Length: 314
Ligand code: NAP
Image (cartoon, rainbow, N blue to C red; front, side, top):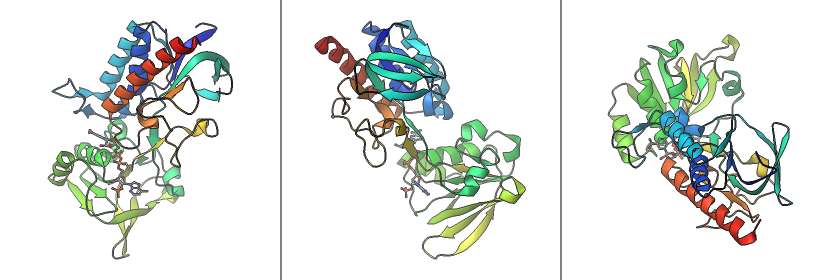
């Protein structure tokens, strides 16, 4: 590592690695701080069917590992598991504190992505990893879920993908959605509704997860939003797939963001409210949130950073 880096990229999802490939090829020797989840959310998915160039689909983990290899081939320095504790964008070079060490850089690319949204109950937190999970690919094959009724919460592509995957393991998968129409893409919605092992529960929300006193998931308490009727559904696992929250809390007060925490950039560029700090991927995008759009904005961020360095002789 140098005294002053050219580009430090925070985050190692599709956006982060793509910006590293471009910054590397521009000879900027970028540093990628992977964070505690190298590869980002795509590593928790199974087959990605809509990333261009892969007619047979591509495994999420494989895609991320190939992107990393490609970035490293062009001189990217990877800082594994690095956690950014503090950022100071008030002076240049910018300063980041990573695992207690200060790193200085001419430019910063923020590609921190988004994390899973939680339902927000006390029982959800207490039963996490004891039947409550946010990743069917990671946890679905566990013995505790085999041939047992399972619950998936949500109506988007993630919920449908999880529900379909879980039919391999559970006896039945109840898909709890707060409306009577899925938000998922048409092809995914049709596949889900055609699966005989998936039982949609429409217009309903989970009000509580049982049973904290037994230290394991035994069921959920449901409420039908149209009729107000409450009921209990037995299940061994609750897979929460209700969207994402951008991982931008650490930039609050330093960078402009909207109420939900998505960073503000000067579209169509990736410039944030501080010159020299760029942002890309899911921490900016609350509309498309696709692997390919994240990769696209990652590319743009690297080009923006390269031009900023050239223009300012930073
Ligand atoms: P999403 O599209 O935002 O869907 C979130 C779902 O959760 C919605 O159905 C929403 O209900 C529901 N929801 C939100 N908050 C809730 C709450 N507090 N209680 C109950 N339900 C709640 O999120 P996503 O499914 O994670 O997808 C994110 C993006 O990734 C999308 O662009 C999606 O297309 C993409 N994606 C693609 C694939 C694929 O192509 N293979 C796979 C996964 C994700 P409402 O519908 O009522 O708002």
